[in-house]
Amino acid sequence: MPAAGQFDVYTGNANPELARNICRYLGIDLGRAEVFEFANENIFVRIIDNVREKDVFLIQPTSRPVNQSIMELLIMIDACKRASAGRITAVVPYYGYGRSDKKDQPRVPITARLIADMLTVAGANRILTVDLHQGQIQGFFNIPVDELTAVHLLSSHFRKKEIQNLVVVTDLGFAKRARTFAQLLDAPLAIVEKRRIGNQDRTEVLNVIGDVRGKRAIIVDDEIDTAGTLIQIVDALEREGVTELYGCATHAVLSDPAAERIANSNLQEVVVTDSIPIPQEKRGGKIKVISLAPLIAEAIIRIHRGQSVGALFTSEVKFTQEMLLWDENGGGERQ
Image 1 (cartoon, rainbow, N blue to C red):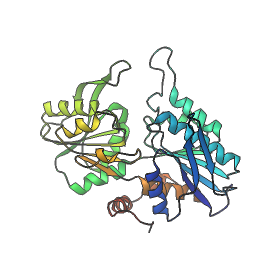
Image 2: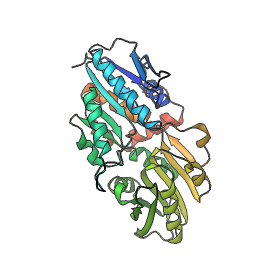
Image 3: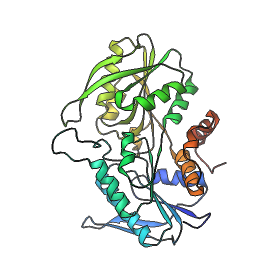
Image 4: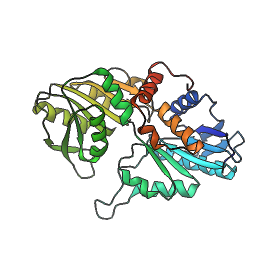
């Protein structure tokens, strides 16, 4: 077991801003490490601090550039293991390759399982992540997995708006978490039936199941990639007579031309988190970013102390509102 009261937080190059915000919330310094790529594209990692017998948390979403981010994380884990860290927790706010979680065609891989095996073999002792594409991915690991959800933070943002005559809309894949989102807002849930077209990054919206006519809709999903599906749902809801439209998702992949599609749509606002770094040119306008730093930081504290992480989502609404206020006020140390 790691030495009591000692834990360090390190980051690769995938989302250092989120790591710095987590450390600011915790009131600690970000651990010192070198993570860079040689001219031959080989990645080098050196942990500068002494991590012997310490509880180490490595912040690294496996986002763009996905394969480089994965390799950085694997090598960071190996470096900490060889430096005799007491326990290594890979904090992966966005889990790349999460869509490849089953064999839905002949002779295709289950890459989400492959990544899980790689993280485990590299030496991770546990995983901390946020809103996996499917909950079954937890079962791909033979080490403990704590899956956080941004549903409470996102719903609190909309609760403050006091939107009347509301309906929450999602697809079947996100229906369970969207039901929680709808309950938190005391709103009904409608389901969009969609079909993915081959291996292309395109889907086809078939039906809207539920009463949405004359209502204001919040479209909820785990991620926004090219925003093609989001805009199709917007068009379908407008045909069904929805009067006002909002969107929200945990992970803002925002591959081109997502930002342009959102800007040109009739969406009033799209709320996302900083699980993936969002370039400044894609921020502002209709896109609102909420920080996951307080949520992840609280989970890190609980993991280190051996406390329940699930209790984060059974506490009163006041705690979630405090995390939102921390973000909106520019951050600061944990109170």
